[in-house]
Figure 1 (cartoon, rainbow, N blue to C red):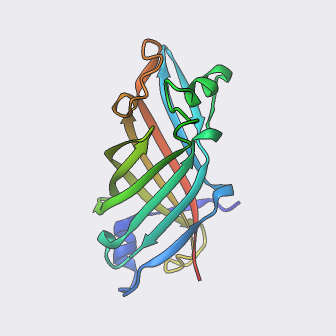
Figure 2 (figure 1 turned 90 degrees about the vertical axis):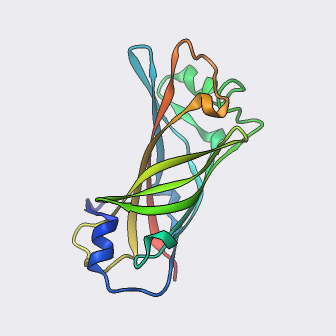
Length: 189
């Protein structure tokens, strides 16, 4: 597997000739992950939720035209402690039986130094809240600076699970959930 070289949104915008079109990308789900971490007393619970689908449209000439739509398969969630995965999918946290999908739809993107801020609507347990994630783009090491056919997008951020009604075991599990999404994407022909 190729190592990635960071390619920030600002660098992309400066290095590329202006393009008039937005480019659609498809997700390589097999090489993409949504990882999370939260406090569990003095320890941490880590886990992952499978990416179900993603619709990304990137406009390197105008980052404000970019859009991101992501769906996660809550029923496939895993956790670092065996009992935590069952509790995570249960009715007191993600309620996977009633809400098998978690979604994020961007409402705005803007450059922010060496990254971009992606603001959008996150829906968990049927509750939608606005969140802002930090995004960075990476391209395969050794690829040409203008070769944007295969990219890795990293999104990171934090949410409070109580904002979405996921309040189970609040006496043992932290409210803040740290998120790291790593998505391999390929330009569609």
